[in-house]
Length: 166
Image (tube, rainbow, N blue to C red; front, side, top):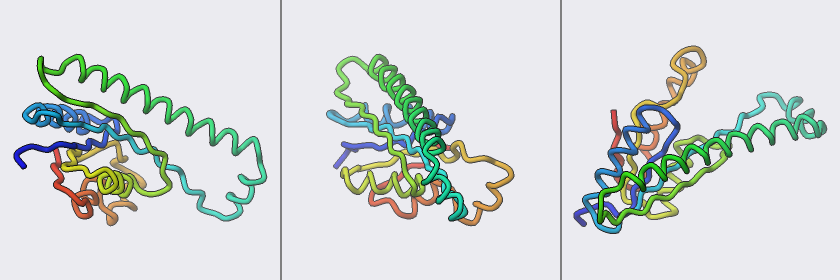
């Protein structure tokens, strides 16, 4: 195979993910009939104490507020990815046979596991991911440092080639 038929690009709004999108479109443009999938993962917030879970389950207003937050996040992600898709379709080279899709998932798991799951379930040939996304640089990130970044985890577990864009 000389080209990549299906390219997955996780997009979190960071400049690194923007670079990854541009690279994916340029690379896909060299193959006829390529597909680029822009993916956004919305993580759910785990409640650390069982008493908080119990209160949330019994408190309809709190559940409704949390649901509203995720709906808002999903709507924002949809808007951003739709605008990006439209921008890419308008900017496509004449005669370029490129299909652009979007996918949004709300997940209790890690972003990396959702990216890898999508790649496995949809026969993705290549994942192009930014080296650094929107993970906080200070504070809690020190606690998460031993776990590794999303791009590192994707590189280690993906069922296909992964290209990390710096």
